[in-house]
Length: 416
Image (tube, rainbow, N blue to C red; front, side, top):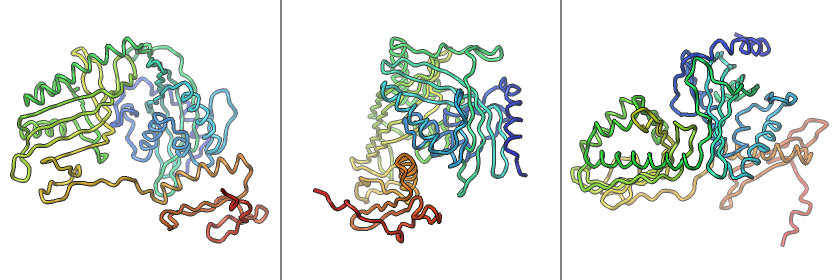
């Protein structure tokens, strides 16, 4: 079915307020909430995940990459802007202002209506910005948005149209009143002390192999995103916890170090923690000492029974030692294998390099009025990437071909 873009935009604008009072259903990432009746969509939900990640990293290039080359950007109080480069300029200016103030910012999406066709889709929703200044004080603001997404080659979805505006600062009668959105430094310290107490209880529950005490510190819908990207449901995590507690043996040492606290409001906070756990455990037919360590983001929510752990994601820097020998995480233990020696550098694919260089060349060529350019990346004497940009002949629309178009060397050899 072919979708008329203008008609679709009108229809979804009229439908927005009908759906806003529905009860939300949280998606696994914590940055995306789907209202009841809104179906998950792998391609679209991945765009929102990367969008939120770009906000956390203040990475304008990665956010702009989520828009099509001809995207229409409809910011309040501005003319319609066309093209990914204009989108990039907007986000670059915004993120630079946050960086200058040594601040941080997060964005959370709530989708209230969604329609998906084969190659086009639209979402209607509400976004919430959580900004934190250099003093650790947080503030929230919200707005409504409509996006039209387009499926491009390789089943990659990008935003074709993005329009948004602020929401009035009032509470809906159908929803629980929200906090003011500001968490002071004193309140943040109170939250930190409360979480430190909860982590101490988690450590004791592990050492005592007390399943009920362990579960009492989790919400009923607790879930995780594993290192491989797969979701672990509440039931799966319960089974995994029971198994862990049944096989670990003393002596045991458990430690949780809070590296960073990022409050979303007075009742929800994301704690980045470093967890260390040593114990004895039977592996490969023998009781062996095991030490593990991992850094991860843990979302805690305040309940009538105190702070409880709701969601774990972004596992990284995982270390695992068995019998004092480092082993590769996720792989079966082989007592005769040499110690795991991870690579010291990450190899980049052609697609990775294109993703890196394409927006840079587009922005610089536009700014400097350069009609054509070429890049080659050489490593260890071998060309690992080459690509042409723009035109070799503007009048004839002859594109630059990396291994055929000839450029004058000029003064490039005049180096010290």
